[in-house]
Image 1 (cartoon, rainbow, N blue to C red):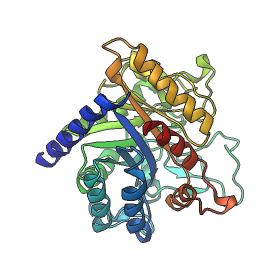
Image 2: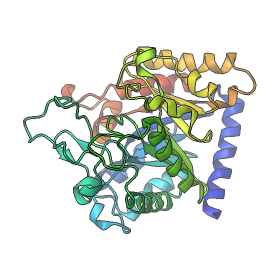
Image 3: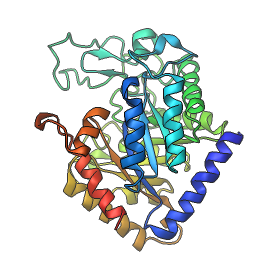
Image 4: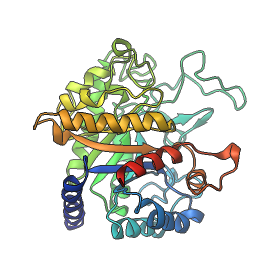
Length: 360
């Protein structure tokens, strides 16, 4: 508790300072955690490049890439050690950067023709056990049966004993006061293959899982952060089934706790849905990816929302979160201008564009 309080006080001071000197308090980057052999280089990159850019939030997607002690069977290949993580914790603390880890919960439990570690080790948690992954080399996106990524069953009586042990462990080792649970692109929920979930309202299932994760984190004073796409009506808005929901989970926006922080990503268009979340009482960040023009427009939109907001709405607009979906290696090389042409990561250019605005 003392650790979380200290982290909160440091972040609160930083937030207060930025509110006085910036149109919004949070200026973030979400990226995959580096592999162990790149930790020292990435720590140097944080100190020399990210901190001077104006960054004050770093979300690292860890998933199975940590040397878990609570469930060592769920370690991925080449996992980070406790000592690796502490190097990142230290450099972020020294540079007043809030550090938040992510493990994908509920959705994204498979990718292409490969199961994630959770369903590989615990196949009984699979929401759709009768839908098989394609053989390598036979992948279509999505498969004819609609498969994109598998989900775990949110009503399985044992799944949370496992995933919450990992959540607690990763929150502790990162010495953090928040956790990002992913929760994006959940296409399999309340599926007919699942004897527990089928027939349940999908919005209620989704809201129930969000609430259960939030309530667990709250016991240690930590916040829940998540992606916002499943809370947007993709059909009515025309935003579509990737950045919005076609399976009615969007109604969960009125069922989840108001202290959940929403990361509102839009990559093809600068859609103004931050207002939707703020109007529902939720704190929100706008999240671009690799389109520089969109990133700049999304940043302008965030400032417009804040400038035109009521006193009650204004604090809910937290700021910007640049997302990176390539490797840490490619992002650093692209940022430094040393990446090969076929390995360029345009999200580095988007981040630079945001940084230029932050430092004006």
